[in-house]
Amino acid sequence: MEFDRIAEKYDGWFKTPLGSHVDRLEKELTFRLLAPRPGERVLDVGTGTANYLLELARMGLDCTGLDPGPTMVSIAGAKARAEGLDLRLVRARAEALPFVSQGFDIVLSVTAFEFFQDPALAVSEMVRVCRPGGRIVIGVLNKWSLWALKRRILSWFRESVFTQCRFYSYPEMRRLTKPASWGTAVFAPPWTPPSLIPRFDRWERRLQALARPFGAYLVVRRDR
Image (cartoon, rainbow, N blue to C red):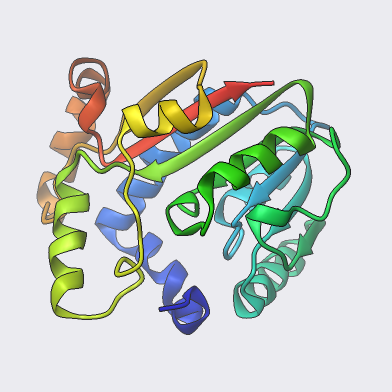
């Protein structure tokens, strides 16, 4: 299933109580490792509807997003125009980035790596376009989590975006990216009711430290 087929509904998840909780925790961890600074040039590989890229534009970064899906890119552009934000959006694949070498301070990819046809080549391309002293941050859906288990089981019974998805564990990402640092987030299970979300909020930071390999969202950072 291509993401363009669900593009119109994609952002709806972030408006649910659990989706909003997950999105906030994922962004907190991603930006903690990313350490973005105003004026930096950032490339978001697999930007989708620009959920992360818009946040970075609001922070004052110079933002470029790449995605193969025309509907995703169209929605991202409409959201940016509605806020008066300047995003450069390009249709292309991660394995062949149409940019000069060392052109970005930051290369980011969030929950897109799982769908790349050649992840090793994609990493090589991200390294190529990142300047020396820059950083590459990749967020993926963690194989060692209840969320991945649920998504995999459901994909056995009906087609979804996760049918062709490859989940990754930290050891696998370490072999591919050779990260300098990493972490996980989101320890609330996928069936958590809204009434229990505040409780998991209170436990989240402790679980990030004590159960690091098992959060639903895994982020690695490689320094260039």
